[in-house]
Amino acid sequence: MAQRSHGDVLSGPIDFYFDFSSPYGYFASVKIDELAAAHDRDVRWRPILLGAAFKVSGAKPLADQPLRGDYAKHDWQRMARYMDVPMVLPEKFPLSTVAAARAFYWAEDRDPLQARLLAKSLFHACFGEGKDISNPESVADIAEALHMDRNNILDALGDDAVKQRLRDETDAAIARGVFGSPYIIVDGEGFWGSDRLWMVKKWLQSGGW
Image 1 (cartoon, rainbow, N blue to C red):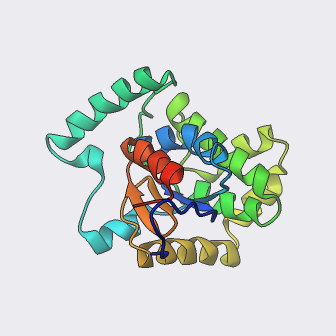
Image 2: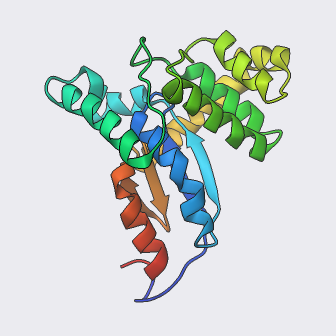
């Protein structure tokens, strides 16, 4: 973790790790850029595959856990009402997000701002409209609506370099201790969960503690 004295204000980018299949990641995605901008910080959006992290931590998807899964489904609707954002759980859930994450990294190498817009559109399609974003065709549809070339996207999803990029990003996240979504790293400090955005805000205001 970065060394600091009380009251120091640092200026490095915020790393925002998430899986596109995470409702809590969706909620954080709505606020993270605004929160960072208020404190003159940039955000590095980093989609990963939680399944790989679960293999290390021994966890499993929240929706599949007895008791906790039922609570989470209730909480997602409550959180959406509180934040005044749409929330429609896809009929197929949990769902694979390999195609979505690959598309993001392919787009980021060409236009980081467009890649971020794609990420927000994928999240909205999945949880704002309840669409299945697990297959390449669905991802290409969403990308095409943003004036991205559909055929290029579909080709990229099968490209070995793009596949490796996602594996590398996921491995790097796990090496940094990322085990859930969202997981936000600020000045070397990790915060897990969209319910910790208030603490991220306090950290940015104070320079850490």
